[in-house]
Picture (cartoon, rainbow, N blue to C red):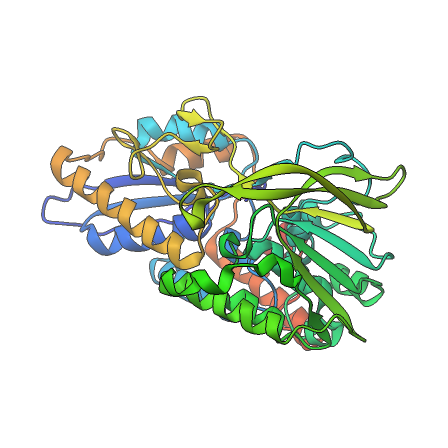
Length: 460
């Protein structure tokens, strides 16, 4: 996630050689923190700096995990413990991102984990109509990303069409359909809570190009939707033609999801007095209709081709239908952008060109910038650890010792010259305490600040 501040984590251990390995990590999300955690455990002598643009750390854990999933955020406790142990300073500046890349190449081992902050487009007519809002921005709106706090989202209509069937799409559907009283005790932003209190949303369609067996959501997220209070899940039975016959051939994770869906289809009832969650399959968006606001979407019907049942491709037929709706939410994936021309980048895949996390000698990448936007926090952890091991191996082979390099000292000098406010770990703790105290007043774990200026005032 991009923002306007940087974090630097500094941890020093001295070996017999008194030689220090200096590593710059760009991006203060889970990939960066996990990498730092693994590296400091394995290196006898190291200086590791993590740079993040916002005055608050943890990236996707803070800004991507749904507010009703507090257990997923527990990893923050581990990150915090590591930082408190090492008394990590945090540095904030505005225009140092490129220097963090190009300068870091000269000042140590650069390691990029700045993630994916743009969304893939539907590329269909009507995508610019008001109330067509990317899932990424809605997540930022209810999770407290500063630049999404003033999102103009109209919830006065009763029907939402979400395109995409991953966990982010389900998260958005669940938040829109969850009774507000259940959200009041989470760390959802106050502006989102107020808007959802006045929401008229009653029906959410989750629309996928392919079939039930190719849906990307995990069983945990599906089970939560099926159990959601005051909400009925309604399937189209014809979407499941032939699925039962294939289930015995599936690997266990996909088999469990398929069995859960089939069980729910068997309990199907197209009558509901509360909210409705309606997953539909084999449909592609062709056009979003409306002038001053969304009125409907035109859907094309697909058929699947290919031998491998899990990787079949969707091909449009001539059949079409129109679905009335008031809000359209594309949720077809995140996409990293090239943040610096010195990083080899594949614009089609939206990743830094790398082999198992290595870009070139002394330059590495992890997280979504490396793999593309997929997986959960555990996936990110495993990948960050693997890349950290690759770095350690290269250090042992090439001996990347840069005692003569300035690294953090040079960046700190630039910050002073530019008269940029510097935020240390203790200053972040002030922000953290403030948010928690504000949350206690209304029975929430924290009330997230969404104004960067306010964050800086509290830190100062």
